[in-house]
Image 1 (cartoon, rainbow, N blue to C red):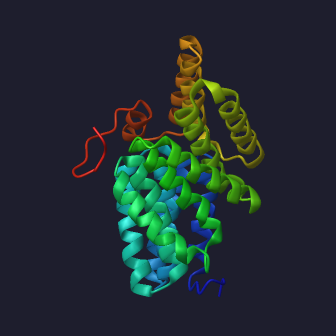
Image 2 (image 1 turned 60 degrees about the vertical axis):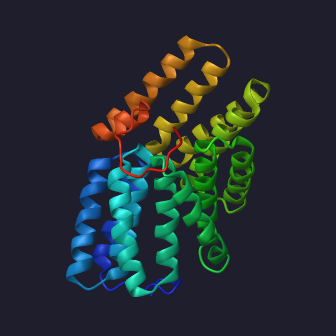
Length: 272
């Protein structure tokens, strides 16, 4: 037993899931993909739905972080089906939190908010550490819908909880979203505040090795440079973001998303 009502029947599958998650956060996406896939196969062979759901969700989070939203949402759908069949609240919360982020980043803003807000009450009982992820999903969706002030409230709350819980790598995205919200809500007047948040995120990457988040950080530094009227600085940061992503051997879909050219998907609910 692993707590939170989880019971792992295949130690090897669990170890592969854990190794894949670590490799993914370090930006070694191909290695992470192999370990997650093997963990899923072994979990199914050994009748271990908890590890199957965790592996699918972990891989979905990594796909979401690099902008490979179609794969992220596909894995989330599979994980939710497994988690709900087992009836484990922790697994359901973990998967739905990840799904809400993937939906928000894919442009399905209203659906992301619906799922995220539905999850928040149950996180008080099991999964407090998932709250920053859910709040970041809400902030991301609010930004997409053109509500920067509401987004800033959610982003600040998510970043504060992540700091209180010392979440390390998994809390860095909350800082990235906070910087985005500050830029959108406050503009040039608070550019220094956004820059300080991004510098903190960059320092956390150095501390934790979570290089998978580097493209997003450089992307926000580019937005900050444009806000300050520095096109050369923005171009440099955009190039760094793409270089970081290509170094991880991310998919062409991920590169398109980084360049703000997401592949069209039916029924995204995105604002036009």
